[in-house]
Image (tube, rainbow, N blue to C red; front, side):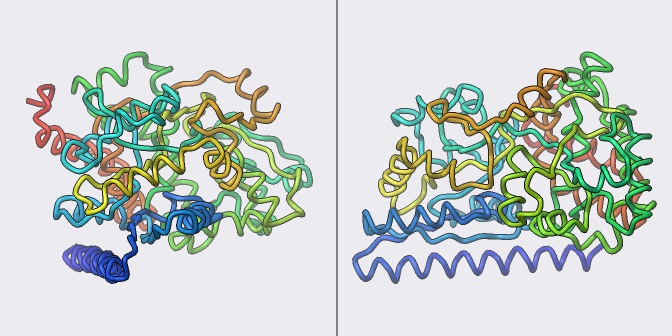
Length: 433
């Protein structure tokens, strides 16, 4: 454990050095009479299409202000940005995953973020997204988040060839996965190396917990029950472990990354993967043979059939309150939230079908509209229960340890409760006193 801790600490220090180096390049640029704004983000914090970098170059051509992107692996970003914010060395612009519960603790906006409340563009963001970037009636962040729903996407051709249908229960999920595995195809793509992806099944299916036991979220928030008492959550964790043990995630899957998932799915090496609406466009553009060959269904872990909706669930941009160039940061935010530029972000992204700006017309297909009409919806657990999202990466490490046989589902639940209590104590939550 000590070696793992030292390795993690070394990684954070190395990445900190890289960001400091970025700041040095900024000073050099200033010496030439030009301003460079540093933009810190995780890999998944901006679209892999490169649209943000493309627009930054466009902005530089128009204004002379350069945006220097500092992209950090997902597994390190949350810890690193906390270190940089605490030390006062955060980038001029930084991305942080947001939801209404965790943003204040993760960002500490009154200390670290530029107040955007009086900016014209804040009045154009959707009412659903504003709580995720606001604190104490002030707005601090800018988001391009779609309505976040994680579906299981599947290869229609493989399913048809095997005579199988999308599952509605865990037993059916297992049965079709075995048939797929028998054909030497990875049934379900899993990506533990990215640190966060394996956690999605636990909490995106949270509405199912609430549906089967009304008041679960409220009891958890009032500390009237422990996460360890949530038997449905334990069941989902045990099912993930069973999938791993049965080989349904493939061999050596612990080294898989989210970025490699599109390739595995597009090349038909994997029959299913977890993604958000719009995935079919991204896959088909990279792998034309996959056009019209993708279907989707809700995650059936724990026999779930409820669509989990996250009102935030994506990274939002914040301007560093301690930046040497706060006005330049504001000018960039004003520029990128102009209508035409919002449309560029939307069109040039990873195929998302919605964006949290009502002025931009959504691209939801009839398939999604019809599917949503047939299924109930609910808020995902991490957006409705305190002290879940801030420990997301820690839970990811626990799950990876479980897959490797080093920790049990019961221990994972105990760890979640322990960390929740620690966070509540730090924030002086009276429900934990």
